Image (cartoon, rainbow, N blue to C red; front, side, top):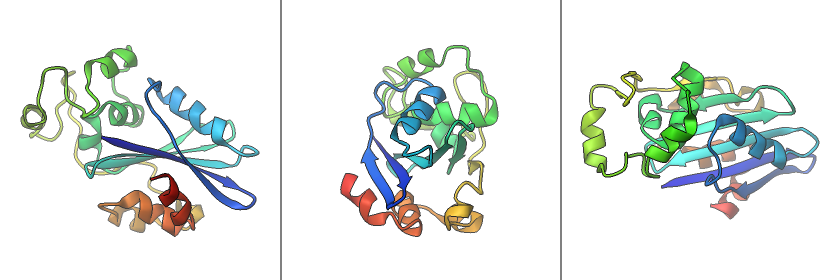
Length: 180
């Protein structure tokens, strides 16, 4: 199960809103979703978390390219939304991202496959169906939140309930809790 929320910086602080990812098929869709939540093209953070397996942050500011961080590339690559982010970061095969999303259930397993089967298939470090191998560990822009008060070291030290800890470091813990 996924949790997704948007944090948009405003003149009065942060505004949070939960968001549905049902219609999201590409990184461009995620970026557009964040831009739609932006106030005066200010910073918007899109948080995605799959249970306690991994979390991702997409940072969008105006028309700049999105900045992305994923806490565990191997775990994320086994889920539909995480695969979208890791493919962007690692240059994965993106012939038709909709095909990849359609083939995956929301728990990150393929149709007819159980989570245990998926874990066995990826026990060697995250082998994907395409034959690519994704290493466990963080990937992406480790300084994504540095100017907002969360250092690279602090970001890499986060484990469970990371999104709330990030929001608290940004002064947005209470607003994130309202949508959680």
